[in-house]
Image 1 (cartoon, helix red, strand yellow):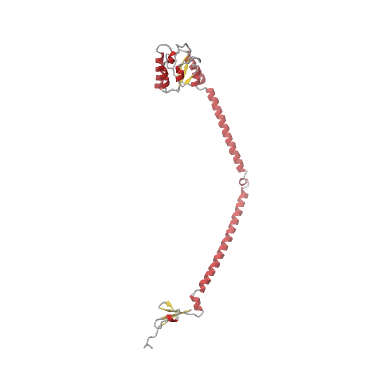
Image 2 (cartoon, one colour):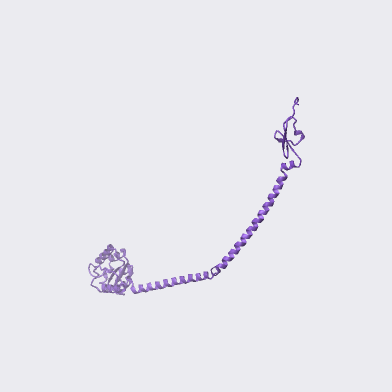
Length: 258
């Protein structure tokens, strides 16, 4: 926002193109002094607000007397700058000149040339910054690679990697020893179980009624029950006597039968 014929626009263009040749500049020709200058500045700010596609707004003009700069002290201009949503740089007059616009804007620049330096990045500074980032990135990546290379060397120097065959042989020996120990334990366990089984078999054999019969004893039954005492014996019931080689049945003789 400045006059199309003043020194300010020439300085802004020159500095901007020097710092970044591809920068895009939009000039809104504006009356910057005299009658109607304040209203024209307000309209210029409103035009850019409606346009919207700008990154920063420079309000500038060259030096002059207090009367020449008075439009930038107008309340309408101050309110328009304050309400502007676009970041605004005030670059009015020379370094010693101050206006109300300087205090309302987001940034004050001493001159229009200084405003261009604030608004436009220097391509050489950007290139140097990129070089610094590249150097830092290279150093970090190289350091990380060196760190992992050292870690890999440490792994390679470990016993398991230096002589894997010896390590496998040791594990094989341990496995064989575990197998032998397991076999011994199983054999001992089986032997104990066998001894217990034989002992139980002997106990069962001693309690087996058949073995009692082999020693000359017999078993007397009446009505399906074993007769253990004389008083349990009935002369009128059918009797079965079991011997080692078989059993015989005895029927009671009734009175009158021969």
